[in-house]
Image (cartoon, rainbow, N blue to C red; front, side, top):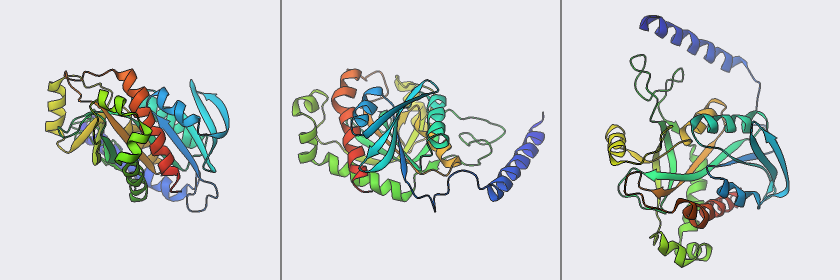
Length: 286
């Protein structure tokens, strides 16, 4: 198949997609839906375990090798699940949340490696935009562009972004943070005054653990704050199903050879507590 033929196929398929979107009314109607159902995905089991304990009337449902926990949180129907790792696993999980559990919005929390040199362990990044750094269909289309969608970045809706910013800011205030996490644990990881940054997050099926890879990504995408393995894939699925999303990441390492951290301890002592408190603070605003 030649490039011209592929371009013709792309144009034809895009036209079919546009036609189907204009005529098909199946699925959720967010303007008239009476009940809000929020999906919460965690990148680590320890993070979602703590959130599950917040649910009232909790029930379990196993589907596709995942356990989904349903219940009420602040009176709102909520579904909590461990996403598993990587883009495909996370995309499958959020698709199930949307199609089977009919969620109306999605919150994803987890850890990430710092790409921007100003970031420190314990800082928090809220995604304003997400990009798949391993998407490369050149010469058929520009690097990083998602086939058939003609977009490169998936953007968080302003409403969700504002809510998340309020939730994180409330948590990182010194009096709240030290009430949440013991000073000894904060000191162990060198966390003094964690900051909130809002910006671009890159996702791909690669764990960054050396300076060369980190430097290459930073050179190609200089606006990237941090890197992880799920967020942009989740954002793509949400985009295609018109489901608002929020992606929040705690910086756990520097994504290079200098990343010396007791990862399980960091998840248990820091990021899981961050996640639970941020979730609580988000739900207080609904």
